[in-house]
Length: 122
Image (cartoon, rainbow, N blue to C red; front, side, top):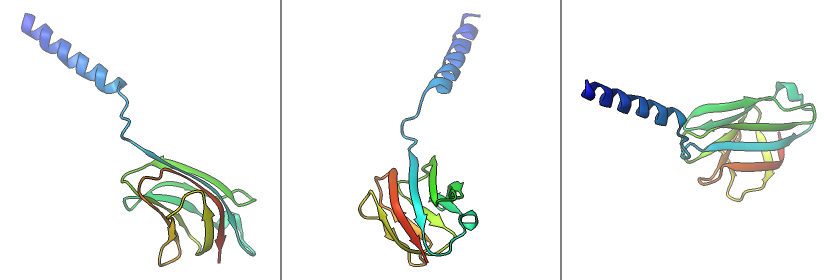
């Protein structure tokens, strides 16, 4: 009987600790910005955060082109993806680059919070 209570206590302790522990290794990506360009319909533009090949967040910009996104990182790097081609951008972090198809802004490893002052679309 004593063995039963000991095992049961360990089981309950394990559940309690696992339910209440917070894993600080689970980083989040946070991106905010403003989209600009000629003759844009912001309700037709979609903005995504992609990490490890998966979309982790999605939004449509406001009527003035502003957006805010946040989602859990699945790897060390992530990218900001749009459904319209990117002409140029300015950001709060150095090292961000436009992908070869001009649909993504690649964010270098180690960055989790990026502000895009302007993303100019073609």
